[in-house]
Amino acid sequence: MLSLASSVADLAVEKIELFILVLVRVSTIVFLLPAFSFNAVPATIKACVSLLLAILVFPQIPLVSFTIANSPVFFFMIVLEQIFIGLIIGFTTAFMLYFVVMGGEWIARDIGLMQGTMNPFVEFQSNIFSIILPTLLMVVYLASGGHYFFIRVLFESFQYIPMGNFVWDTRSFAEILILLSASSFVVGFQFTFPILAVVFLCTVALGLMNRVMPQMQVWILGIPLKVIFGSLMLIYTLPLMVQLFNANFEQLQRALFAILRAGSGG
Image (cartoon, rainbow, N blue to C red):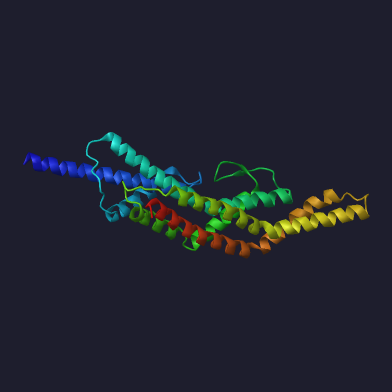
């Protein structure tokens, strides 16, 4: 009877430890997701979402091929494995907004609005375009149901990379990250090209006016002109920006599943 009670207790402890491992991976991913990585989102909300998702994921995880037993060192190594997997997936999802922030910096630099404004999401000063554009596109992303994809990735990460079976294909992973970085730079340039072109043409026109009428203070006139024309072009090209954002999101989806396959050694 005592041996049966001891076996039941060991099984309960084993389940609790497995749930903790699931919670570690899930919470690491959730805390790094674009919609939750902002400091404006309370840590309590992030923790509650992580706990809820872990409860939903736990019954569906594949059977583990190891026994945790009473080895704190082994358990700690598995915890580190889950944190690393979560960091990789969470870091990759951040590429969804990298090109938007980069494009906002380019636009603000060329228009002349680099002065700092308090960013409520990251709690330090940023230019206004680096605040407005990510916020606007994040609203579009959430309204279109894009967050369901990341929930799917979270669930399927345990199918592709079961706990204790982490075999990372570093070459494939490096290739994916390099391609994502290059793609973010290219898409960021496409994202801002219409505004930068208008600002460039405005600068050329001001230069020609300065040659024709040297006595006219065209550079003082140029500051409001760049802001006006650049802002008007930004409003006009917003639908194009949304299309580029969606195209980049589709590429990110393929990259995430490629990373999951690389994590399974496939």
